[in-house]
Image (cartoon, rainbow, N blue to C red; front, side, top):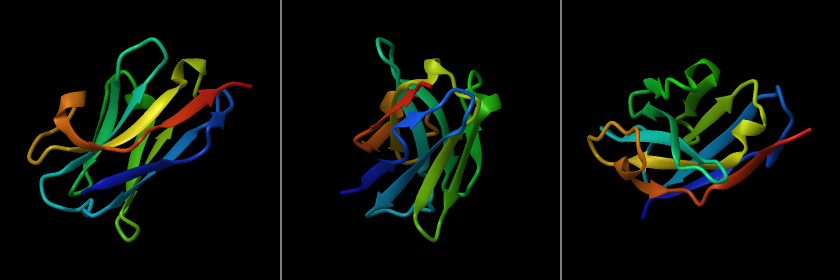
Length: 125
């Protein structure tokens, strides 16, 4: 059973950078043809895909967030990270990391088969 676990601060001040880490167990983030995503669920809104890093290290981001987003990885720790800069209260959400289905390039919920439990991040001064 693949397991993903998000970690990071639950409170971020406006204009700062949100940084989250996803730790993966029982699979390698370099396994061919799996993509590793970040998604978020803002209050009273639908799930939003933020971006992914692929098994080979390439990245792709939601165009609406691209200018503020960076996803990277540490293969020695089997972790990948999200950085979202210049946050505002609109970035308040539950943030999830997830594994894309085999050979599926993900950009929506159903493209993923394993999920972390999610982490609440609030942007407030």
